[in-house]
Length: 256
Image (cartoon, rainbow, N blue to C red; front, top):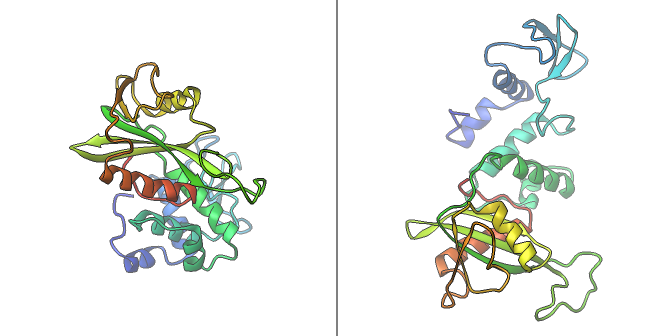
């Protein structure tokens, strides 16, 4: 969308009902008019028995304006999807599933949670480039006791009742830039090397606190800085603010 709504009022005016949302999807899918995905025909008519679905006049193939999107076969109205997308894209500090449930008057927390999860996955740029240059890398633990974990224990260095997360921050002009976060099963070289291979470009320099699991990653220069132990304060605050939201399945806008 090149002409993104500049205010809540403008968004509401443009996407105030199902028809407006469906028309936007149809225009985005077929900017030059309907094209059948099966036969390439350019003539179709809307079906009265299926919402926002067109039937090709040539081959009779039926195509919904939501086909191939995360909205397809959803029981939620299009307006709920559009509003959820707008709220996630414009909340600078992120929006939780609970907040989304309240603001959109969704029937259950589970619905809001699934909506957040689907939108989060769809917002990832599939062709995004890996982090390059100097990258600070560190690991942390987030309290996250599952129903299978005992109610006691997990103190000290135990991983019981904790989510293990590795984070990387690309340093740009002396400050934090793009970030990558991933849950790992442990802090072994196998897990950490896999994280580095997936998220750092060949030739990048990984700056760490000297944990033994980092050295030896193929194509990555390892730089130890015993002095910083954890990330620099600004980078640390920036990254682990996002780590906490990552663990709660909350979207936070960060550069791709």
